[in-house]
Image (tube, rainbow, N blue to C red):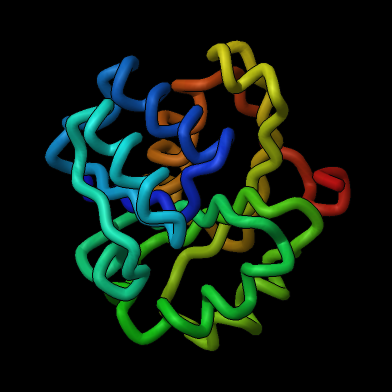
Length: 164
């Protein structure tokens, strides 16, 4: 599985560290991307993974793309990456308050699996509680999302209306 994390703030970093520590991913399968070049390259060097400041390049081979950016930046980012996302790949948003419907509207792609998760700050130390929701998530994708997210805490699927 190739995974891209767009946004290397506290949650993006926590997910990257958690997945690598749990052995969910090999370092060669993770790409970090952020507009803050110093931040993304420093974190990537620390973790031994690839990094870029170009979102389109970052998602081109990703089977899972995690959107770990501020809600105000999500729609523009989605419009940028939509043409580069592989067919039938999965996009997971952890942006607070952004619904799966809003994500779908921004991406304008009907071939993607879309999911939303709401992690909390204890994820920073691997002890989080994460709500997960999505529309028509295939079982194999559901299992992959649980595996990825459980690397930083416990995961519970909930109706999307309860995530906020």
